[in-house]
Image (cartoon, rainbow, N blue to C red; front, side):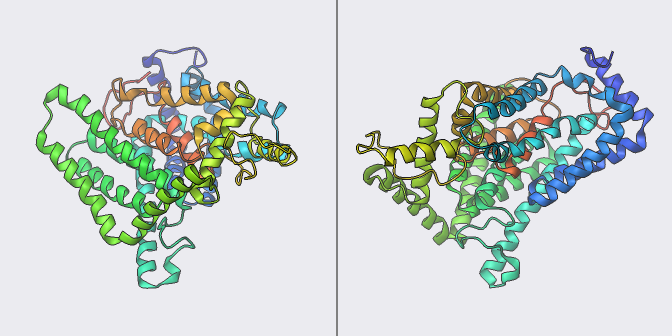
Length: 448
């Protein structure tokens, strides 16, 4: 019966049976699962070792408790994840790159194991979300240490970064993407919870805004601004019509947001202004003078190369790992041509990175409309509770995924290891074929 489609009551019974049959193993599994989510916002070494420990625990437990995975097979999100993985693997058949390029592009797919690894403890979802939130707090604390060390001249408290980019133990671009997810997570908790939890979550929204500003990642700035507007819109729609929206709360929200951003500009006016002015100048030079040698210019060039890949093979793409090799091959052809094409793509500029610095453009360029469709379907299915009835933790997980998606407009989420790991964790927390949460109520209620 566990491997046939089950009712919510049967799913609850299946998980209750696991709790009764293996309480010690379940506690160990929960410990390693919480550790894995806590370390998701830490450097990659911590992520991989914690994932390995969770994998070993899961493999041992599933020898006798493998039937707990039965309902997961019927979850739409899990099935899309399988199709996405298979399509990535099949792209080796037509990739424009070598097998090594292909492996580099799909290497982060290993983190998709988070979906089955976390499923046996998905009834402790609130614990997992709490561990994830605490890990983000530690990441922001590393930025605070970085800030103090930078301004006090203590080199041991800093990381080797541009002085205008305070990102703690992360690369600034990765930090910006992860923190956009954290902003959605804390925003969702602030809207759903009451009392002290709401106050703490609201404070963390403010600190996360400061942390995003400190990274100097302009794409993350844009994504965070869009997410804040979306958070306000969701709050207005979900709460305004239901029980009367408080104008006082709206005013406090706006004042708080402006105050937080203003504080960041006061403490780091030169860095923020420098990054902003530099971005404007780089875009202007690229669009008006065809100068794509700057950071922003190179990003624009990569986006245009991605569009060329899409036009070349719109259905299946140029294959995982094929983006840079295909661009370099086109560049060699164009250099050998007497008359360069006049598409305004600056053909003499090679693609400087292995990916297009845009989640969706890179996905469509390498995996075609098929891969892009699977990716979009997973995201839409995972964040559907924004418009449907939310789970007991409110909109924390779907809004975190939405924040990561906005950051993905400027970062290739599924290729970078830390962001890919967080993406699959959020998918794992979004499955609907799950039981209720026994620690919150005496009568668990399945959400499938």
